[in-house]
Length: 309
Ligand SMILES: [Zn+2]
Image (cartoon, rainbow, N blue to C red; front, side, top):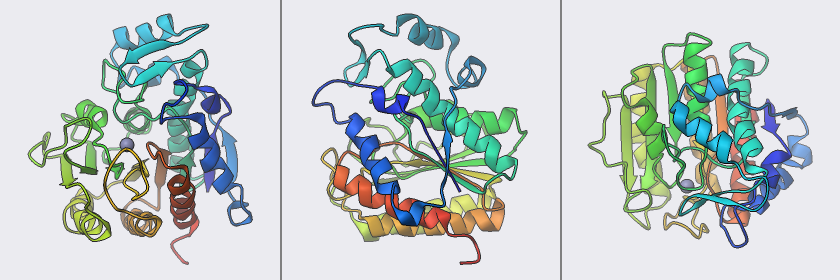
């Protein structure tokens, strides 16, 4: 199994006191710097190309990010999303990691990959930065799988506590992509109601504040995984946000690391059954460093287990 990351992702600085801090990725990398993860094959994340980004973002938006990226100081893209001088490269590499990981699993170089990158991506829409996100990395990777590798069925699983409005927006009229999300509602960004179905390729399972392990697992077991089985995906992509954890300061769900191990085991079983085991997981949210450490370790440990163990 491969681990994609890049030092530039540690340099993206949204400012003092911002919850999406470089300390998050440091915590993730520290958690994976443990003997039980010694077998991870560490790979430097490449930059996404403009061609890759333009499959999911409007040309005017991509140009504005490249043209306005600050050389000093900072640029506020929306109330929550800030670019520092290192942010453009970080965002390019965060999206490029997913494309490279997709290439690797589809070339059978590895069955699974985890992209330890930031900024996150799932709120970024075709034409706007939003909610800490600049480029939508998971969407860029999904579009890459469709257009470069000719896949016809790519599933995106999004257990981040926030609804991935950007990913839903990008693919709501794309029947080759199935988008599945569990998230707290009400919560930022306010989308993700059950009746948002796209062409039938979008399935949302909103959860009320304070819902915990039982409700989280039921949403996946009763609503989201059955939709995934029906779709018979050729590739699974995971928007791996760990902010549904009970320690997370930005939301009120009560999920624990054992639930992240559970969902990972289940999705790997489904990948083994339908998609030759192929899973590419990408870090999205998660704002408690303690929760991130234990949840990422649980997630990656399950991803590393092969079908036979
Ligand atoms: Zn989130």
